Every structure is written in C-alpha cells, then in structure tokens.
Length: 74
Image (cartoon, rainbow, N blue to C red):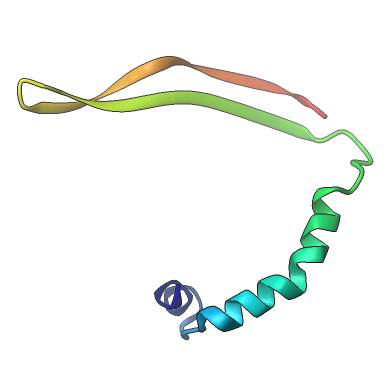
C-alpha cells in the first residue's frame, strides 16, 4: 500500500495512517451511500464475461456470455 500512495501522491503513507483515515471517514461514507436520491440519475449497466482459453498452444479471449447493456434513470 505504501508503494501505491508513493505512486499516487509522491510520498509514502503507512498502513496505520491509512487505517486511521479510513476509520475517521467511514461514517461519512456510509451516510453518503445511504442518502435518499432526490432526482433522476442516468445510468448505464454493462455486463459480460470474457475468459482466456488455450487451443493448440494459442491463448485467445472467448466470450462466455452475451454482453448486455441497460440504460435508464433511477
């Protein structure tokens, strides 16, 4: 995790510091996640599964299910 913070912010942040920050903000995140939605919000839902298969030594991507897309408003 320290490598990630160094790459993102240019400085290393210890796991203990990250844990303390997460604990401090967790309540606000849960409040935001459970807030009522006041108006319509557009959304796009995409779904699909791609697997890697090996045939005769060659590895290829294979679609395991049809891709689906749904659009609408909440």
